[in-house]
Image 1 (tube, rainbow, N blue to C red):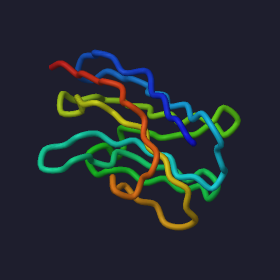
Image 2 (image 1 turned 90 degrees about the vertical axis):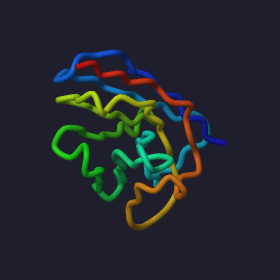
Image 3 (image 1 turned 90 degrees about the horizontal axis):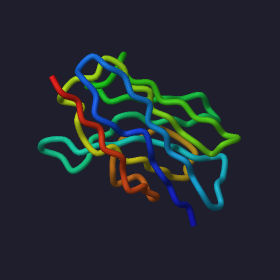
Length: 125
């Protein structure tokens, strides 16, 4: 069983930066995709970023491209989301998610099996 625990959420002003962390506990295999998702209007969860470190792949949602960066530390079973140039519309609960798969990346909520409880990000104007 895999447990994901997020941290790093906070209240910041627009234009600021935050770094979210997610640590995976349990039996973790290397062929994993790790992702961050958040609620968005009109959808359940919007894919923010996903990483498949074994293949060197990353994928970002259109609304965060060039502002957010996802990275993974295999030794620590941790994934990070560096968020720069934050906007009020980035305010949300950010969820860490994981799945085991060989192949293409996905930002779809339904494709992920393991979930954390979320960490809150609030951006004020």
